[in-house]
Image (cartoon, rainbow, N blue to C red; front, side, top):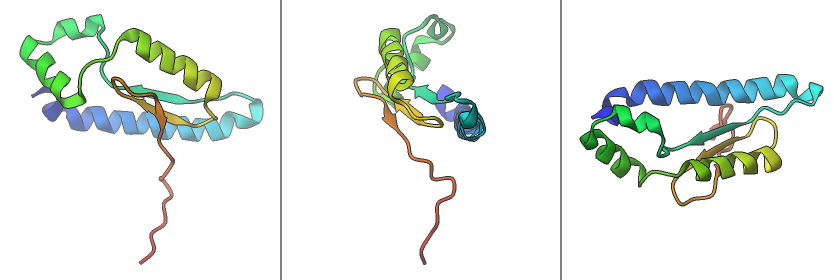
Length: 110
């Protein structure tokens, strides 16, 4: 229930962070400041203590299992060293972080 009820707010705020990252990166590039975004799935942290076991099991099913904090830290270091300004990388359990291309100004051929 947690993901389905609050999914719109969570997904909307994550989209806003991605958009802000890309806009700020463009503005700060001339100052040699790199702004990047890492969006990990759910990791096993103390924040999970605020959910019921039933909610935790549903979240786990929805995202394919939880990551370790170390996996998130490793992905952070990878994007820090390899990422380009404005890049947005997603991270899921048992996957390497992968960059999502900017499609904000996509064109459509009809």
